Amino acid sequence: MKTLNEQISDVIQQEPVAVFMKGTPQMIMCGNSHRALQALQAAGAPITAVDILPDPRIRRELSSISGWPTIPQVFVRGELVGGADITEELASSGELQQKLDDVEPSPCARKLKSRLQLPSIRLPFQPSIRIEESLDDIEAAHPGCTFEI
Image (cartoon, rainbow, N blue to C red):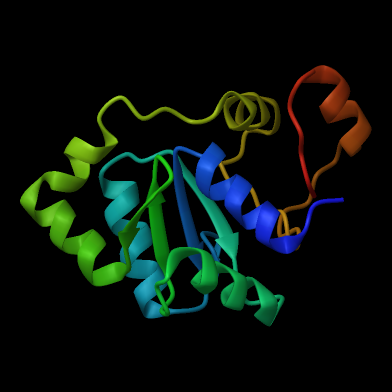
């Protein structure tokens, strides 16, 4: 079993665009998280969101990895972009779109999205979506992908 630090690092490194936020895209719990998410969505980013609220250790581990103390934290291709203000500034200047050029959802996120008809969202720490299929059925249909629900 992977440590929390490893799980967070995996999301940062493996997902093209990751946002660690308060809440989920379906239930945003913070204005700054909302602003960052809106800027990414407007730019068409394939967003992978992680809710940091269920466990305070997520925020501590994330900050120790990134060196950034505040939430939200946006990563593109494994690189910390920043929080809401920086993400909005990059969107306004066009730099966010440049960073996102040629960024596509991870293969596993694309498969899961097409199968479940949901946005590309991975929440490895606490599920926030209801899935009618069993995890075994989903994993069997998508060899080589790991889904933590």
